[in-house]
Length: 169
Image (tube, rainbow, N blue to C red; front, side):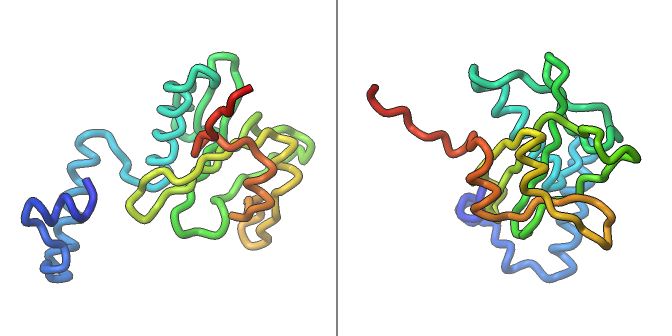
């Protein structure tokens, strides 16, 4: 439900005091926890990726990776590992932590999900390991890799959303 739909129901966030808004946030967080939802941007992106892959016959079916799996958020039935990074306002993805062995491949695919402020899907791009290595940057402070939000990166990967219409052959 977006802001206009809430306002149509008589719910106006702007009329809430700061304290009321924080209490509402707390109530939403508690309800999300009761339902087993983390309500983080990252989890929203992961769910969108898994749903998109499930709904598209040209993509493998993914399942969530076990909690705590380093650098991997989803797995395909063929055993391919997917790292999923979600962006809303950020100019770079979250970090990908290197292994002790710098030559070790950490995953087969990186999926970058871009969401609007309303958390609607704007873009989804997948990079294979080699493409990730070509576009990654090093964060000295975090001692980990990241990918910048840039045309160069998005042009390098395969765009899964928006889906390009197929023209007449």
